[in-house]
Length: 333
Ligand SMILES: *Cc1c(COP(=O)(O)O)cnc(C)c1O
Image 1 (cartoon, rainbow, N blue to C red):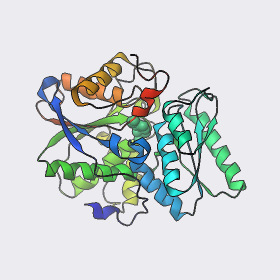
Image 2 (spheres, rainbow, N blue to C red):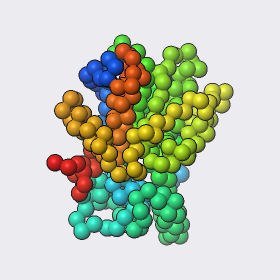
Image 3 (cartoon, rainbow, N blue to C red):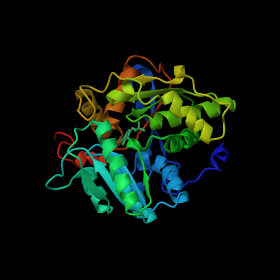
Image 4 (cartoon, helix red, strand yellow):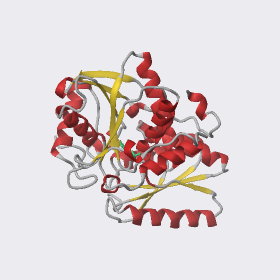
């Protein structure tokens, strides 16, 4: 099934396939499996490595010499873009929310270590519109300086970036077949929607090829994605167009975002998320974070408690995020 991606430009950045690990029985009697996309390798790993393979493939094809992207103060996407630039010999500029700290920690420390230039905007954490305007302004400036920058929107969530999760989903279902696991649902954390769109594109492609496909449930941890922005259906269908499968479509009814686990806002910790971080650490040695994967797993465990998966197999895609544990408010001791 990987043939459907062969015509696409791709930089080799991620260590794949990532492992699919068996976890314990959870609420309602379901069996938890964890897809270790926290171990994609690139600069500490996480889901952005899969997107960056296609984004950087496109950047190299376009002859870019610099990468520009944008994110929250503790952005994993920015950290992995910094690492991608280091691997590919490209200058990297990061537009970040908040003000420059006295001492960089967590993802910022790693981004600086990878040689990226950090540009602090003073913007509030989830004011993504303001951050995107700053990205465009810096991109124009670097273009004027002749650097031929390749500019990547928040989270790398373009159709090109989403290709990373179309391939990721095909990888997962082929792996499930190889391990004789039939998943009834796949659950993961969503914030800028590209992971979700890619997964749905991969699911539609497999379904059209005659595969039985599981339910796909996104746990929304940003207000935008919980309100339907970006439009995940449209993004998934653009991704299918890039895969040259114009006859295969994702329907709005395929898009399920469970917004109950965000708490007060993006990057504001929840009790359930912190409990999930501790549960994962002690039940599997898995490292989750408070903004993304902790809230995501709290949703997966909560849905299991509600009986959503019955006695079936549920796969939690661990999208990464552990470096944020080492930021100032990473986790209370
Ligand atoms: C970016 C990120 C997500 C969400 O992925 P999107 O494609 O932006 O929805 C989930 N978990 C972690 C750890 C992330 O860094």
